[in-house]
Length: 178
Length: 195
Image (cartoon, rainbow over all chains, first blue to last red; front, side):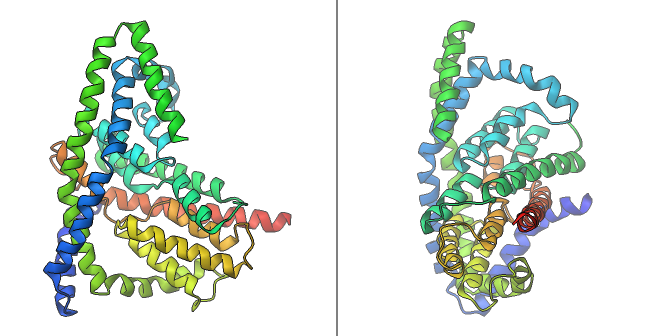
C-alpha cells in the first residue's frame, strides 16, 4: 500500500517534466501550446457553473431540511452490515447518470466531511474511477443511430457497480476504515 | 432521468422543511448552495487551465499517438472482429488515450467516429455489435489516469494532501475496467450459447 501512496505523490510532477522535455525534443512551441490548451480550461470551468449551482442547491436543501438524515437513518443498519458507508449511496446512484451532478455531490461530500476524511477520500476515488454510463451510451449510440443496445446498458451498469465496490475496498485498505 | 432526481431532491427537501419546521435552514441552504457552487468553479479554473495546457503540449508533440501505438497490441485482442488496420481501431485507440489524460472534450468526437466505423463494419445495422458493446463497456468504466477535477476540489477544501487519492483511483480504475471487460465477455458468451 505504500507504493500506491508513493505513486500518488510522484506521478504528476514526473509526468509534467516528461511532457515538457519530450515536447522540447519534438520542437513543439511548448509555451504557446500550453496557453492555447489552457484557454479551453477556462471555458470548461465556466460552462459547468450552472450544473453545479443547480445540483448543490438541491442537495443543500435536501440536507438542511433534515430529509437526508431521515433517509440515511433508514438505510444505515442494512448498509453498515455489509460495510457500505450510507453517505456514499446518493453519489453512487447519480454517478452513472450525470457527470456534473456527481461532481456536485462529490464536492458536497468533501465540503461536509472534509477532504481527508474517509468519506471525502472515498467520494474522490469514486468520482475518478467510474464514468457516466448513461451519457456515454446516449451520446455514442445516439450519434450513429443504434436503436438496439443489446447488453450494453447491463454491462455498463455492472461495471459501475464493480468500480464502486473496488473504490470502497481500496480506500479502506489504503487509508484505513471509517 | 437527472431531471427527475433533481426535482425529487428539492421537492422532498421543501416538504420535509414544512414538517420539520426547518424553513429557516432551507432558505439559507438555497443561497449558500448557489454561492458555494460558483466559488468551487472559480477554484477549478487554476487546475483545469494548467492541465489542459500540459495536455496540449503532449498532443502537439505526438505523445498521445505514440501511446496509442504502444497499446495497439493489447486493444487488438479486445476487439477480435475489428481488423487491426481498420480506421475504427485508430479512432478507438485515440479515444482511449484522450480519456486516460482527462481530455473528455477531445474523447467524445473520437468515440463517435469510432462508433460510425464500427457500425459500417457491422453492415450498417441499427443494432449494437459485439465490438460496440466492448468499446462502450471500456468507456463507461473510466480510464482516467489523473483525476484533475477531483484534485482541484480537494485543494479548494484545504486538503492536507490533495493528490493522495491518485494511486487509489488508479487501482480502482484498473479494477473497474478489468471488471467491465470480463462482464462484457461473459455476456457475449451467454449470447452466443443461446443463439
